[in-house]
Image 1: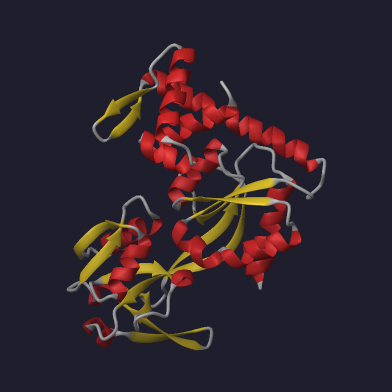
Image 2: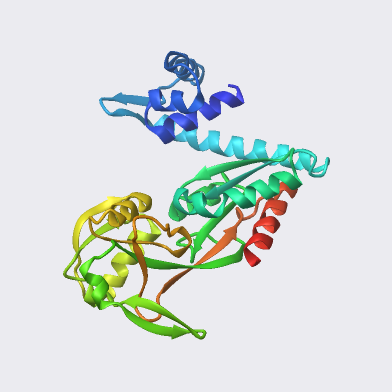
Length: 303
């Protein structure tokens, strides 16, 4: 088997569909199907079961996927070590970040990094913080921007910045009449107590996201049961629906948009804060490119 076939195998597993995997790999579906048949013939077993909704790995397939992931990680580690002998004249760093936050925080800093190291490739992996934690465990990313604390990962981290979870309120929403103000560091800022919002409808993100999980915990801690009209949306869509007047939603202060007259309020007098940190895979070789990107991010956000 060739390295590209290992990548095919992992992509099919991630997409759960041969057609979607082919699109992601920029190849014809028939070519990918043929490659899969060849792998199955070479390994002597069926790797995926075809279903009406896509494909799922067999027990043999699960073993092959696990081995393929390890082999590709080891290969990337080998490439990084050899590339490092050339300094930062070339190289590649795989950076993990959430789609939502990355769209606001990442473009400028990556642009500046490319000016410093034009021959170093920055490959972005988009996933929520919980998924990125698993990718760090598997060594599939060299560096990731994650929300602390970890659920199960023990990895070296460096604090980047503190973000705040805020409430997205449509313009002229009735809850605006219940806004209070508090002074923090000599500056007055508006906030809303969750108790004052409970009669209104909410739009929440999935349970497996930091926003969705944290919001539910805040309600539970106060013994509140929110009225939820949608409870499995991505953070960007939830925020967009709130701005359009379809309910209240949560977002990050770093991702606030000055659109449609929406208001962004702290939750409670003290607010809800999360620590963002840069994390590296535990026990793995750290390339010069990964270290350079980490330092660039730290410099950028310290300003």
